Image 1 (tube, rainbow, N blue to C red):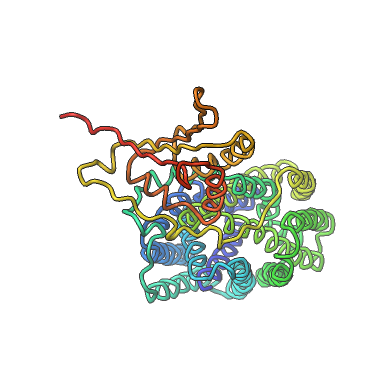
Image 2 (cartoon, helix red, strand yellow):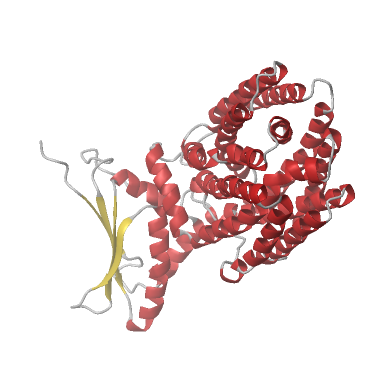
Length: 508
């Protein structure tokens, strides 16, 4: 909670200070770009590290970095040494630190909550974050209105990050998700995360929907400081209250979401809130007075909470525990990366046309994005089906074999009746998705031309260690599907014959 309050306090102070040192809409919009673009560089490595290393150490490094950099900002403002480009540099550094922290926070949260309670926990986490968005800007408004102004605001933020550092320091050490095998290499973990996202339909759909919404919704945040300061003509305290209205709306949105998340389809929730966001942008563009501004920010808060909450629930409940850090990292890359890049574009549109035209164009884009829900439907998964522990015993491997460098070939031999042929092939299409997303290569299914009904599934993995890692990645839902396939096998034995081969080591 302390870090969330500080992040919003920092975000508002950055926007306010930038409008003081540079009046250009394009430069002001670059605040969002500098803050969020590091997610494209660092989020996926962070997700990989959170799945294989001690998460407490990662968070301590992040909180320490944030405290030092923000304290430096306070000093620069106090001594009148801060320029627009220097501020953007510091915003980028802080953005890099946040991009390392976000996947770790999300992964830790999923681990400490029982599976049945995780959807509610994700909503409560989003609610706490948006409550912080109400507290942080309100506090920023008070601090910026003092004689010390931005220097005091940055100083208080740095103190908050120190408190967060101390809080994390008191935690017990965390364990990596993949604790049953030797640690994965970071590069292979990165490749594994991208491979899973490419081969898992539910995750691809969620990411596509995030992109289609944020691409246009980011237009509001790109020019929000200018809407408040130039169009509505708010002073620092009023601007803080305006941002606090967002947090208040988010609280209401979180309450509503907690009541409907399991009974109303996520597709319906996202569609209705996308339409509400489009209407809100049109209203503030055409009626920029203080009371309309507060109402619009309240509505945007509720919309933001419910829409992004839906996306996070879909991602978190459809990925296994061994990949959760990387899945959330990829989500944040798409979400915040789109925010960052789109903000720069929306800023240029506002610069060359007007803020009002930019908001109206974004509203039209949001309405157009509603069509994506026709083809890409969000789904709510079941975390209990994503468990990976204890499904398969470990395979004893001879100590004479090279386990890390020799490629392995795995074959499954089935005997399938002709009447079950279509069912078998349909299930094997789903098995292919499981195998490929978990890390196999060169997967194929073949029928013996001399013995119709004799089928062989085969695939290649990079090493014996990776073969075992892939076996242990099999989730409860994957296992249930495999059992359906095995039930079609007609012998010999209840299960298909499994054979594992390894390439010989290179000769000296």
